[in-house]
Image 1 (cartoon, rainbow, N blue to C red):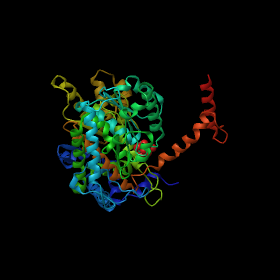
Image 2 (cartoon, rainbow, N blue to C red):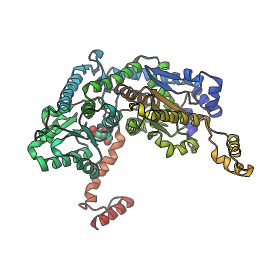
Image 3 (tube, rainbow, N blue to C red):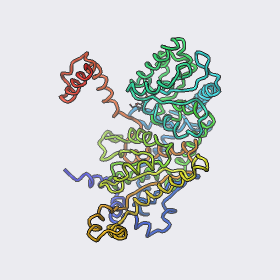
Image 4 (cartoon, rainbow, N blue to C red):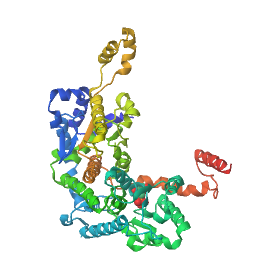
Length: 550
Ligand code: F6P
């Protein structure tokens, strides 16, 4: 068997393989020594949002080779095909037009030549009307009380986007309280409903397909909960639905004027901009929701028109590809120094890993490498948990810091933001600069340790340094900024997929587990026996059944 790393290098253009070899020798620090203006050279902005990729081992030649790669792999042509509404999701034979959901009426988006602008606008208008009716108290529950709490039932793309964004935009909430239930584990629904009163609660059932077992099960149980107190006739006033499968929604019994549709050219993980964003709109109001859409559109226009060399999503994609392929990094950490982005890493896990975790290319042939593992938690918390491994572990993990210069909190809490920013900057600096053995030894001696003690302890206090990080800096996390940020990552995933040669828009990998779960339900409940299953699953089924009997 050959060396997988050298096989991967074989798939890279010579200029990038040479750059990767150079990067391994030269690291990052030397690039700052060679170019005192490296921040200016290696950072780009869209308005007041800055993307700084200077703390990577990409030198000027490498950067040029990466742009050449983007051209060679047809990133621009594929991007133009997406915006033109072509069926670039080839394995599902669909166009990919989430960008149309945040467009202006005269942007002229069409799927297969069929204009979509009017339909998009009419759903936003209907959502706005419903959201305003709830927010103003005009739309009441069955007993005449206003709705104080909204529970969104959905999973994956029908949950992660609105749940993430609702938390991110907490300072802009002036509508009913929002709750999100996704897991089929009854604990999730039970714990959520425990604090709520049926007469003041609205349930939104959000599912693109309206077949997802978790969502359908939770929806049925929520319906039972509501009907137990308010009766069948209350369902109409306490349920709404979001789906592309309007026929299936009708069967569930939800009133027509409370059903909000979207289209098969919107992928689940790209659907926050569609009616799936309804709970967010209810929380922050239609006007701010439109500002959120406008922020995303600003990034779309930039992605579509800026030269590759100035293009934030292209650069973020190229740097991501560089770390994954040229530097062989198995994962990337997303660390928002912004507590309200706590769910952003989870959101990006679906966006990135469901899109780019693929084994074959568009031609059906195996690809040597696809997307990395994406993970993360907010800083500063991560510093007191897993940062040890990022600084001194044996794997290099590129970190993506996201941070706002200004907090929403008032002056009395200014010190919090100062500390947050200082910590974020310090982590990037520490990862890059590291600490040498000699510096560690000297520090110990200065602190009064003996030569022998310093000799023994110093290796443990060495930081290799030259560890990469990217920083995305914005003034403050407002609706438009969140829109720009999400769109930036969406297009980054698109760029990386094109570099990997894969289809980012299908997700066949989730099917097998669903199928097997369906088969295992009667086994778990004892309706069918477990013979024919593998020995491990059989053993676990037997143990489960024993535990459930006692
Ligand atoms: O199982 C994966 C998936 O299909 C995701 O792609 C999707 O976002 C999620 O399930 C939920 O699907 P739906 O909105 O159809 O319920």
